[in-house]
Image (cartoon, rainbow, N blue to C red; front, top):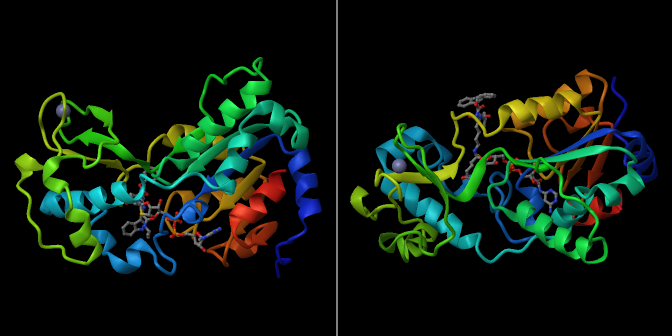
Length: 292
Ligand code: BJW
Ligand code: ZN
């Protein structure tokens, strides 16, 4: 059969050194050390809440009040967390002059399924720190970060004619949702807020919705994702159960055209037996070592 994946860090770093198009496909485990719950593991969101009645367009149509209370709760919980060592290691790797030390003349992109904004925050922090001593480092034209499942703090108009998206971190997002996180956390799903009191579009006043990608919806930036995945010769799979499409397919696609895969996960995850490298453990420990 297949040889077992290697956990040889020095060998991984030799592969990294000759890779030219590197991508990181990230999931909830990347933010776990920042205190944000995952979806499917112990303490996971989809263990406590029913995904199909909260994270689908049909659920929002049936019960926008409940869906907004759930996302209000998620927004409140995502306010305090700070990026951890894994976000920062990836963020540093986005800086060409830093990355070129371990992977000369390479390109890099982060494709994250996370909606918490912590990778963007880490990139800002690391960039500010870096340019203190390297003011000549120039900003890249295209952001190396792709948030394919949207952003928790984006608020999107539901009208097809308008489609306005607003980045809004206000707490609460609207007065009627204030305090409802207590009920949601206690499992009480029966508070009803009239649609007129839910978040509304700032442009056209139609009902607004959370700017995240639900089951059955097309992820953000698929054309760019497909190009990155198609060109990648090394795919880092970080803190994801690899059970949600299409992100779950990316590693396999990279291997199909001859690229290699390195999985960084606390536990075994779907398809990791086919990876060239498997680093079991918290990614906030393994990733800084691997990319350092
Ligand atoms: C650590 C760690 C540490 C912990 N260090 N590791 C049948 C019915 C209906 C739909 C489908 C179907 N079959 C297929 C579909 C499609 C569907 C799908 O895949 N469903 C499957 C579940 C069956 N997918 C979609 O609908 C997607 N759209 C789509 O496919 O469109 C078609 C299309 C494709 C291509 C081109 C064009 C069109 C959309 C999926 C949207 C997913 N949305 C959510 C919610 C977002 C909003 C919100 O946050 O509420 O996204 S669901 C949830 O899962 C969230 C996540 O991004 C996503 C992935 O989860 P993730 O990140 O892997 O988390 P976990 O919890 O599963 O895993 C965490 C891992 O971390 C674990 O392995 C831990 O061990 C590890 N870990 N601590 C390292 N410290
Ligand atoms: Zn609008």
